[in-house]
Image (cartoon, rainbow, N blue to C red; front, side):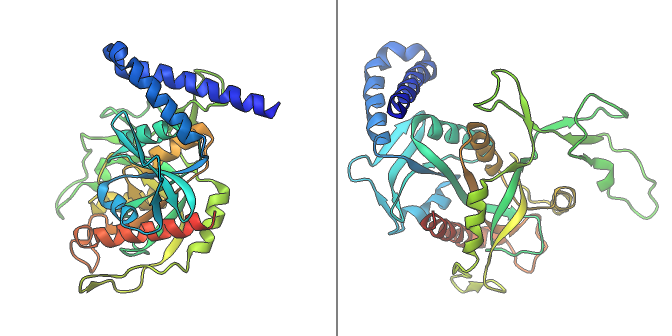
Amino acid sequence: MFGIHKRYSHWKKMKFLSVLVLVLLGSSIKAYSEISQISLKEISNINSQGPYIGIVVPNAYELKPLLHSSSFVPHNKFLYFDFAGKHFRIGELEKKKVIVVMSGEGMINAGLATQLLLTLFNVEGVLHYGIAGNVNSKFQVGDVTIPQYWAHTGLWHWQRFGEDIGDFNREFGYLKFSNYNNYTKHSKSVENLLNTVWYLPEQIFPVDGALEVKQHAFWVPVDKKYFEIARKLKNVELSSCVNKTCLPRKPIVVRVKKGVSANVFVDNKAYRNHLKSKFDATPTDMESAAVALVCFQQKIPFIAIRALSDLAGGGSALTNEASIFLSLASQNAFDVLVKFISLL
């Protein structure tokens, strides 16, 4: 009976893929129909050798350590599969079957790549790694952080100037611009025309929920089992020098409470301090929360590994941190990923 159910589920997935191909291609349906059948057969062949661990990587410089690593071995027959602008690499990492996709920068790219990964392939869990800005001065460049929760902090209600009330969620706090006015000693306090933005939760539609009945999600947890495994990563040996430039101390791997993401490259000290005081965040990036939200909706285990490449907004003893330590942070994040996947 289980085998029948599994085959039926696979048939439904293939049926959905056929519809997805038609929708994505629009007016080119007729010209693409024959190719789509070939693609569906190839997907089926790839999936027959699964399940896989999905790995989502934001950018090429973060993907580079994986491609240059002897730990990653491409599949001897199915090297890759291209679909909707995404390049899915099939192989093994630390002898675990993996499918790797570079998402591109930002929340939309990350969410799209993750959804395609889960829709097309037989994926049992998603690992996400890369670099991040640091908003917690307790840690330094090169440290690798693994948050327990992720939030998308780019969904705002921008409040009307002079408005004291409004129909919006107040649960997750606000950013009041007048709190950051720059005064001289003779200035009087004034209201800022930018007024206040309130942070809002995402609207999600879980796969096991009622159709078109939304739920809200702000702090999205990573998988409990994955987070517990991450406890064993604290002794991973990490790089501390780029050429002759070395960090003040050897980087560490640390589990932290919270990370935040938005379509914003944070390089501002005031906003960095705001994110730390309001949300108790450590890493800030542009993708992790999107990957987390998609996996949360699809009920797929997920965790993100982010190495700190700079103190957002500057102020550390290191100058131009991101430009100097980009490669080091990318390598450190990947080294922790390798150790993590070896423990699965």
